[in-house]
Image 1 (tube, rainbow, N blue to C red):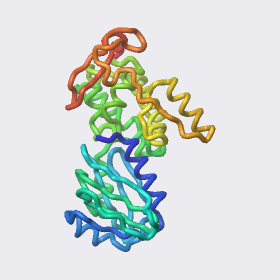
Image 2 (image 1 turned 90 degrees about the vertical axis):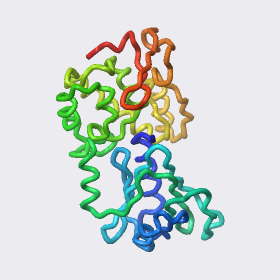
Image 3 (image 1 turned 45 degrees about the vertical axis):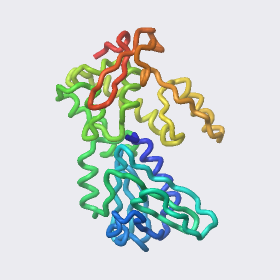
Image 4 (image 1 turned 60 degrees about the horizontal axis):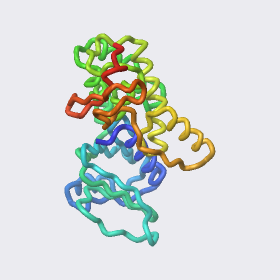
Length: 278
């Protein structure tokens, strides 16, 4: 399932492409025909994300809500020649079409037209999002109140979107390794200072994922990427991690064996040597 940086990156692409315009909205597959009819011809106000939820606000207080789930994909591509309509390939649930661009949505877990009250309800059920601007939707204390009262493991809590929005398996494995935290310890033993380190790290690292489309968790890669972005370059980011998908291999920090277990339905990876801090 895409992690939060992917949804924020997609929202930015949709916003840059369609905001202020009135794209044609259709459902080539037919499964979203009624919803598409409610949006067709309306102006797009903005596109935005919270955690793994994506929203496109239209005029008349109508919002398109999308959750990609495990297999959903939403591509935004230029139209050639301009003004033409490319054929729909595969099961396209939803299509946004302007003179110059087409955005085809396939395989989402959720695709609905909702009103402002429903948008509020959907967001309120999520935890704070490290990628949101500082405010009530980006409040680390909200997450820590839940974590500090829970007997569930820290690794499980980080994957619970009601606790923390947007964090998926790669970020949870890597950020716990970065701060030497044992992933299987209960949340109630996590110190407030340790949680703040985790939160601050996510706030620093996840925007790099938005800008590059790649999860970056190693300090040297992050430093090189930031430098390239500051120079106005498009960095080539290697897909390298400290513990994620490295079971049995030596830890990059202490050399101990990287371990693996299934937690919250996903393969968890951590170092059995240096990740003992609770």
